[in-house]
Length: 417
Image 1 (spheres, rainbow, N blue to C red):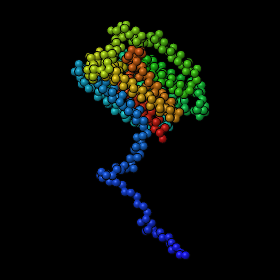
Image 2 (tube, rainbow, N blue to C red; image 1 turned 135 degrees about the vertical axis):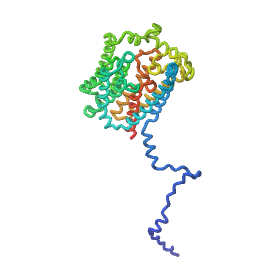
Image 3 (cartoon, rainbow, N blue to C red; image 1 turned 90 degrees about the vertical axis):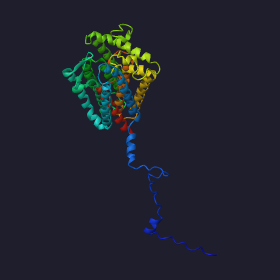
Image 4 (tube, rainbow, N blue to C red; image 1 turned 45 degrees about the vertical axis):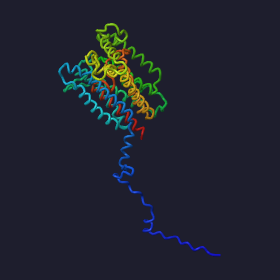
């Protein structure tokens, strides 16, 4: 019987341990074409920060803005040439507005939940101050004293910022006492009375301008927030009835001039007074109908280049899309708005209570305003004089909408984390 040789375990010394320890693979050189590209670790946080944003939402708003820049350029180019002025003047101003809007969007996207609750009352009160300033130093344009004219040809319409201020104010109001009544409980009576005051004060001031279009958008976005907050049916039905009575009262009180009433009701009888109250709608119909499937092409629309459609760079910019880009181009705008609203509702579904109400209110604002503007161009809704979001020319509306998209991105960032 042979004995197995005795095994001696080697004694590990620091030097041997260093030799035997597996060596980590070295990073491949960037210039070596046979090796995969090495991504520095510093890029990981950047990728994470990019993923915090809803790029589809921002992309839809960006594409709509670019389409709007082209449409505004086409709508104003002919008139500028006939006036021997710079044909690109409105385009340059519109692009400047887009740059400012981009900065506001990014700043708003960095707002956290605590800061949102702090600035909510500030934004709301600031919008009220702007509405009060209109009555003191405002200018009347198209029958409504709704603008403050600034040096350099710039104008501010405070009602545009009221839409955002009211949505933020209501979202903060309905969630600050959420823990007391429970997440499934409807807002208490005290909260509803405060909400009615928050809605009624700016709404009355806007109707006195009179700006019926903005008042309808403000009322619709506020109503959407009320429904999303779980307000009892008797409150919502009562507010609807009050809104209808208030609208009737505006028509009966003489607050609106006869030509304004005729313009608002022209969609009910589009073939009556085609050279008067229904002139704009009739010309918009002609432009859209003649566009066919693919349109005449940029700068080649006869109605647009001839200046037959009044206010075509603002309220009736959709008729430019219909005439020069046809059903395909005009339909693309509707698809982009559908994407915008879908992403906003998706953000609302994953957000905290305050963010959810804010997102739903912004979606209601964009959806109603786009529906009203496009329907106005098609003769399906009253001619109320409201712009198409992100597409129409106008700094105030663009700035307010950029802030709204930025806040949606802020809500998305909180849910992402």
